[in-house]
Image (cartoon, rainbow, N blue to C red; front, side, top):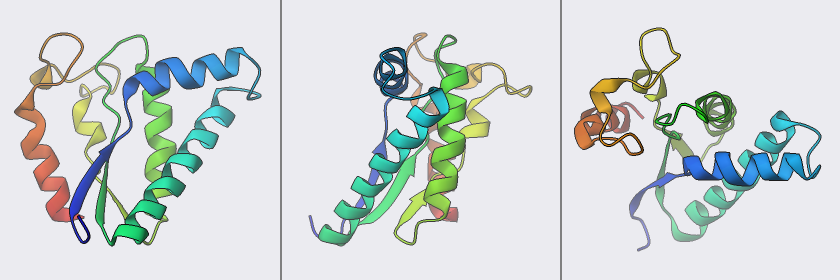
Amino acid sequence: EDGSMVIFNFGEIDCREGILTAVAQNKYQDLDQGIDASVSIYVEMLEEQTLSKNLITFVHPIVPVLDPTRPTVKRFNQRLRKKIKSSKYLKYLDFFDELLSKDGQNFNEAYALDGTHMSPKYLPKMEESINRA
């Protein structure tokens, strides 16, 4: 609805399947180029929707639950955060680091649910981030 507050979340599977497959098929020179292309398309689409529907738009970080894709998710989130921070129309929910262990290498087990998904226990972190944005 026009004027609504919305939260968009790019899925971890998009990092695992889409970008890595495109790089393997030589559609991008390397992973960073694939991430940059995906982030640009994603942000452009979000800004377009935000403006056309007069939305208040928050962008959720990609969740780092799965061990095999965490390095890619971390790289994607770094680039996504930077791009969103430079947008006049989008607000990044900046709590990604809290989803990681203290050393930044693993998923924060406080938010684990079933090995694939996050527990709703993380929602207070998201709420805090919305209030700061």
